[in-house]
Length: 335
Image 1 (cartoon, rainbow, N blue to C red):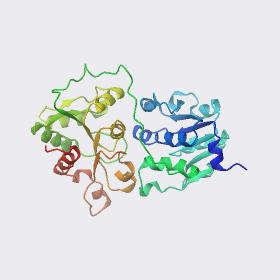
Image 2: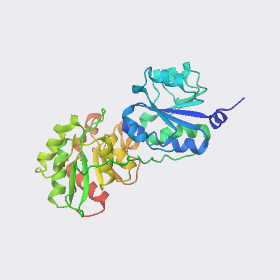
Image 3: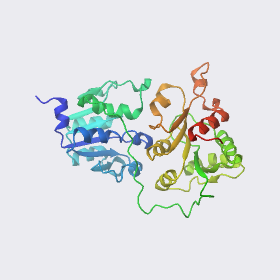
Image 4: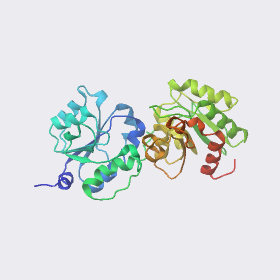
């Protein structure tokens, strides 16, 4: 009888299902290297949401990708139209696992401890909420649990399409000044450092005649960006709501550092190889130990221990002075 390891080794076509946010996708893509190392001849597909296409496009280790929100019939139709020998669920959802079960995909792999985990035939017992390691390593360990290897998670660098330009939106003030991006918003439920704190930090940096400060964000975050801009004395460069995701990636690649809350843009910046500084709560399931950007060019700040969980997760207990000192250390220069 074929072992689970042999089933994976002999798989002609493998799917990885990750249908949530940008940061989650950045931390899921390292699975590709581990799969290709063990199954070099396998066809690897990603099943995702369309807004993550910018991270999947151009990755030569990925053979194809399918978007559940652009496929009539969703994941059921994707599984109906494609034959997979194995499917991985880094974040198992009932409808997705049930669909794989219904379509009799031979090897179904995911983390256990969910009431519907019995639909998987290889369950990996990971206590992700206690945050013993980075989310990317948890994802890669789904594969390591089968192969017996100790593959370490490594980010895949996003591919910026040819022809993307920001010249008509932003021109650097001076070629000898570094660019620091401040991204004060962020999706999801994670706590956030306040826009006023970001504004004071921007003012400190500008007052020291050190760098160009660029504010970024989505259309929904214009109010936050305006606060940062006002407190900076209207001396920051406010590009909030003006950049596509591809343009944002290009700007990041041309910058020295990005400062943000726990959000997808922070992970994209790390994958593009620049320095990052992030603000994280202490609760393990939301902490930097699990969700920190996977790079050694980083500083992560969390509040001092408090008298209760709410206090310990209040990011506004991180002072601007603490952030300023951490940024100086990260940039390894006096500012």
